[in-house]
Image 1: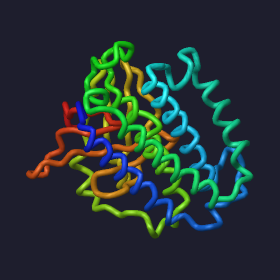
Image 2 (image 1 turned 180 degrees about the vertical axis):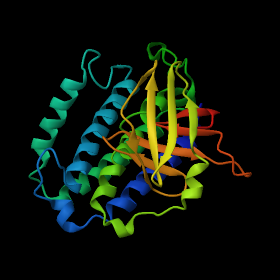
Image 3 (image 1 turned 90 degrees about the vertical axis):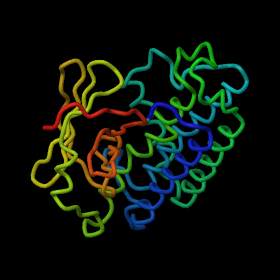
Image 4 (image 1 turned 180 degrees about the horizontal axis):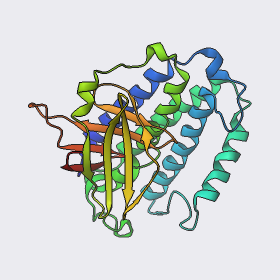
Length: 259
């Protein structure tokens, strides 16, 4: 998406959270509590992880509102440090009861909405409102991160915990319409979607370097999640059945060539 109003932003976040909660409700008590390791999280571990990062976003928005902007993480922090933070967060929450973790999660989401409500329409949507933002609107920082995309990134984990018979089954013919190449907003970034053995497979290419293909699981007829806490593909479908674009982490990829 290229822009979004304050009202639509709030509605989109609520819808996204409702989708996550609907899948979370299908996770069994056993898999929700779990006795799993750091390498194989339980349902409560996923929820705690999302909540901790959402709280970092809440604190970030509080700083912005006070006129004290700063990055969600230090600019020099790479994946190694991010993994270290995740390990610390896991250790701090893994012993807790699922009910307590869920209560924290719901409070955190309401705090996020409350902080967004306090910003004006202009502050959220105008790319030039904050001089330090380098032309990136505040709504994008919210959606391409812990407030939106991160929830989608872990839907795949929840689907892996839900009994296979409860998974969505789609007609393979429906998948064929999605196959194609999609150009991202950043030069050199392309998503290619193929169908293999009745399943969508996502191929991500940056400047000619292609990442490992990722199989996708359907959430419904137009939304598909993929592994490694990566995200969700949301296909745009026109009235005539054509598919001109796909959204990932709030960024729109325009179809350029069928596969």
